[in-house]
Amino acid sequence: MLFAAILGGCLYLNSLMPIITGYGAKNMASAVFVSGRDAADVQALDLNFSFIKFNRYKIDYKNRTVTSRFLWAKSVAVYRDGYGVTLLRGKTISQLQAEKYPLPLEENCQGLCGEKILPAGDSALAERLEPIARALVDEKSYNGTPFAFVVLHDGGVVAERYRKGIEATTELLSWSMGKSFTNALVGIMSGDGLVDVNAPMDIPQWQGDARKAITLGDLLQMQSGLEWNEDYGNRSDVNLMLHREQDMGLYALNKPLQYEPGTHWYYSSGSTNIVMRYLRGRFSSDAAFLGYIQDRLFTPLGICGAHFEPDMSGTPVGSSYLYATARDYASFGQMYLSDGCAFGSRILPEGWVDYTVTPASDSRGGYGAFFWLNRGGSLPDAPADTFSCQGHDGQEIFIIPSKGLVVVVLGYSPKPDHVIEWNRLLKDIIAAL
Image (tube, rainbow, N blue to C red):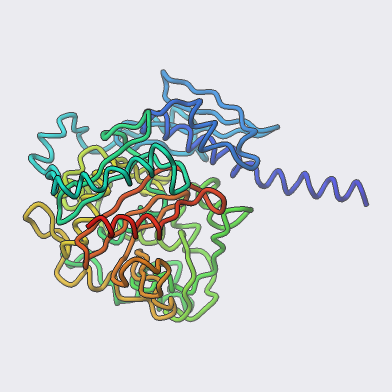
């Protein structure tokens, strides 16, 4: 019995190895090669938990790879220009590096995005918000470890602060805020007639069973009905998808149907990767798809250096892996505050923001279309019209139309012990108005 218990424990631990080493390799590589952060700081802060803290890392700065080892297992993550970092699965490093980014790499940000720069806001309000910025980032008075803080009021920057080692130009991880960017891409493609959010999707694997009734709208509202486990603390679907699978969207879409589509709400990162994989399939080539993202979403927002990192199949990981600056995220939030417009141009089709903030039928007012809602009062001191992009470990873009506010906070603030006191922070910012 003891031998069986030990053997069972070893087998289960072995099944966790791709998650343990993969999480470490991927996040270390992106932090070092995309964000430009110090590896020791990343290991001491971001990767200092659970089994992850026992990983040993080899960082190859010449070839821009990171190898993570734990016990008998290892994982490798590879940086490529344009793409960012991909966790290596099923290919060699040289095979992956041979796959070059299909678009020209823009070195002149000004040339790509022109004069799309967020203006300065009211100086008196900025002065009133300065103590809040200092308390949040420098003194950690709201809990957590914020890296970046940006507040827009009526479209102008009224607060901006960064942790030591982080600059205004530092690209930081979105985690699940990337889902909201996927929402924007669906909206733009819908306006162009490339997709229909209300029509069943022509996914071949679904045509022989009840999954053929699933729509893009069901996926956007997290009501697809597909079986899914989003628990980050174990060998769950989300962990296996992000750290073991070569084609993340394919893994998620192969899940069986558990509920009737459109009837049952539950959070699923797999849903977003199905959507991104489906959107990629609407284009004749990756050059056309990635060019569309840049030309129709990023460039109009003034975002010229972001990395939407792909899985091994080449699909951007819409659920989790966008790297952009704090001001980029603020511009994105301002677009939704401005009913889909930015810098004098319409980006999202008319009515798309209204669709986005319409509650999913089973969400109790808490979720729209890849955006969180405050209709259910989860933030009691924030207005009911508040909606937000939320990411793992404390990434947030709060959009408050009735107050003209966009609030961006990025950093490492995990639940349950170090989560930022979001309600108190928003209450104090609103009071400063």
